[in-house]
Image (cartoon, rainbow, N blue to C red; front, side, top):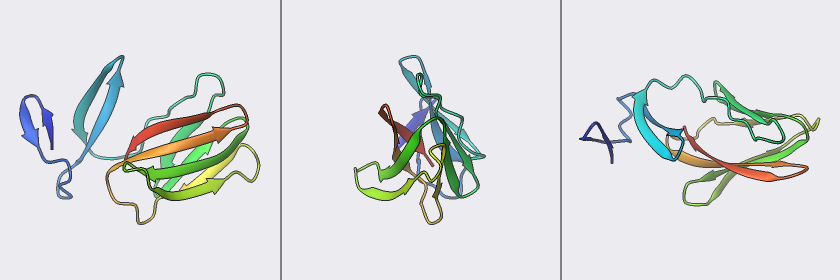
Length: 117
């Protein structure tokens, strides 16, 4: 359950457009829209880019080594390793709508992102 403009909304209705969280400073905003992909996210020091193309999640950047997709409860769902040190592709086929955690491992650091798919 969520709330938009004081109105309670069901977040898991497959007949409705998806709900998304957007961060503006310290504030998270819930909004409704049709899923066309995810916005690009950048790790400040390593210039890692995360994007979605259809049923593929793409992570690219300098020295990207591995990505892991976790259910919000912490269970590992899928993982993939880079073959060239620059790009990792992970299939989202069969992944249901919901909140997931994406861990991106590079040579210098690991960073976890919250994704709403």
